[in-house]
Length: 223
Picture 1 (cartoon, rainbow, N blue to C red):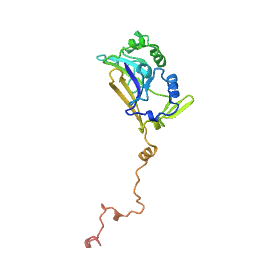
Picture 2 (picture 1 turned 180 degrees about the vertical axis):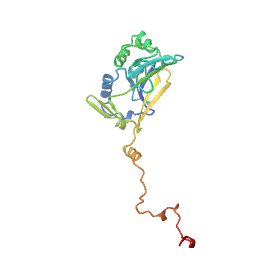
Picture 3 (picture 1 turned 90 degrees about the horizontal axis):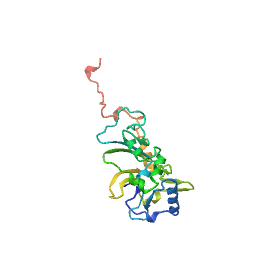
Picture 4 (picture 1 turned 90 degrees about the vertical axis):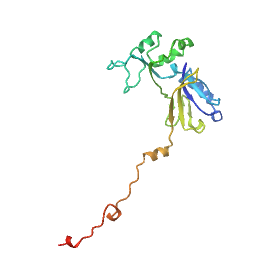
């Protein structure tokens, strides 16, 4: 099965803040009841089943079946935001399993039992489009903001300045894709935006410019 969430390449057990267990319970209640993990491991992780963790899931055609060009509204394109549902045969896949069309209802549906997860098959060659977001995580400050609880995550990442999201096969450990959010220091960002200083030419003369040659009149040049 595919899982989606965060993981780290180094231990963070010594940097876990007081109250983490209470915050984790809030996360499971407010964000993803299917979330599971081990933050005390040598390579800590927090994963949830992809079918209930991904915020938006759109199912498309299999290889050899080209997506219809100019199809009515609801067909995703590179320019459009991804919408929950299916297109070019993908909707039929959902309907066969009675998967709700609404994103929140689909997430809840897959949390309803292991048998529902077993019914779903990620098909090789089929197009899947997905999107994820987290209204409880402030990416500007790397802060987790929950009802009655706020925590700046950056100070507990073991010195790292990034947060990594991973989609992987839980059974084989194969990583399918990684999305990394990197926090840039404010002073570095301001330096990048600053304009390059220009030289002051208010007191410059032609003699300062090597391309300008001095004019020396000759006898034939004067009447």
